Length: 134
Ligand SMILES: [Cu+2]
Image (cartoon, rainbow, N blue to C red; front, top):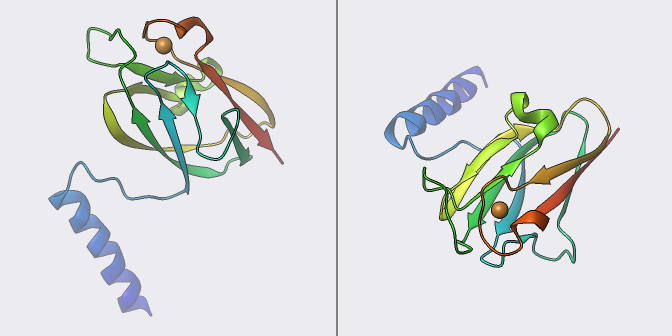
């Protein structure tokens, strides 16, 4: 068993070295789209809301489409929870698919996710919620 664990760890380490762009998922997968109409969408949900348990590790896969305008660094949207910026909830979104590992905060509540990139029409309303429960 010990050998298996060591080999698995070594395999992940190698994967990280050989494929630096690939991220090793360590949390529950959450898929969402930052769409070209400047709306966050989650497949199967009318209104995009991420539900999580306190401290839950999440692997967020975001597909982003340009909505008309982009920032100087090329970001077409962003995914920011201002209160949790220092905990990694501050993601610049480039066109295409990106993956991020974050953890739900330790305090239950509703958190506002905002796009902070002037992405075009509808930008002011480009937000969604993270709902954290015990
Ligand atoms: Cu925006």
